[in-house]
Image 1 (tube, rainbow, N blue to C red):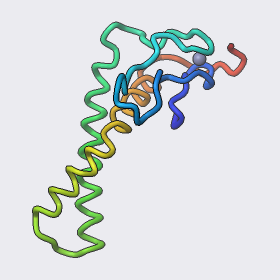
Image 2 (cartoon, helix red, strand yellow; image 1 turned 60 degrees about the vertical axis):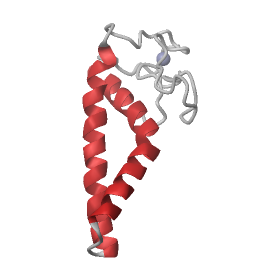
Image 3 (cartoon, rainbow, N blue to C red; image 1 turned 135 degrees about the horizontal axis):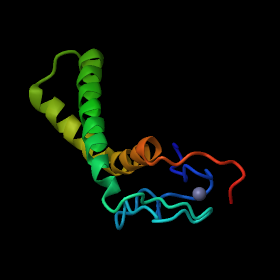
Length: 117
Ligand SMILES: [Zn+2]
């Protein structure tokens, strides 16, 4: 899952482009290039991934706040805000992608078949 591979065969790539290419960043193949598994169970399937992406953002936000507080003690509020925004922007491509991967693995009803493909 961490390599963003097809849940069915674990060989085919889910995404059509590498992570830091900003064009079609979160574009997922409609079928697995390796085994042909349908990776788009419903037309708007990945809509729900938005919520996961949001949850990841909030988790990151809290982690950063706590980390700064532990590492540097009490700092001015703007330092927190700037750090959180910067990290969010930096990690946004990863979060957007993994929210989709997580979503597909959890709700895609695709199960690993080692001998497929
Ligand atoms: Zn596959």
